[in-house]
Image (cartoon, rainbow, N blue to C red; front, top):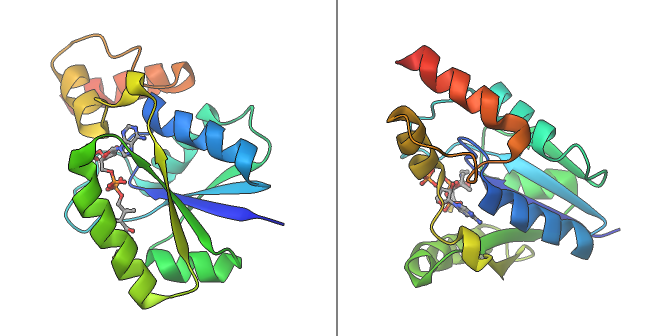
Length: 161
Ligand code: COA
């Protein structure tokens, strides 16, 4: 059985993430969406909230599930018995950081392969920060996040104001 891990902060999940998850779910028997901590970020949504938002967005994808893990990505992948990590590349600017991450992970565990998928052109400008910024400033972000979570994101932002 082929299992792929799709890691990220997902603060919150966006349409760009969902596109990668959908395409990954066709290529692998199972896609585990790993909500992890990025030590350089201070997330708006709690880990539980981020997992829940992914679950709502992927309810129609039976071979996908979201899990929070507080540790190294390679340890999580090993624990699952998987050996493939999927990452989306939005632009050349993503490449340098992702390349470094892939090499670091390879160094930590040589059995783990990182597969890069090219992001759909419609999503190449989206990031979780952009969603939060537009929402915070009262702009329309309906096209940027899965429709199932639009109200959750809106309410969270409004509460935080
Ligand atoms: N569509 C739209 N946006 C996308 C995207 C896509 N396909 N792919 C990535 N993005 C966005 C993300 O939302 C994120 O936006 P933000 O910076 O506004 O939050 C940005 O692009 C960067 O994404 P990414 O590079 O995947 O970073 P991340 O913070 O989401 O995830 C972790 C990084 C959590 C996977 C990484 O820090 C990690 O592995 N942590 C675990 C600890 C560990 O193992 N560390 C050592 C690694 S060597």
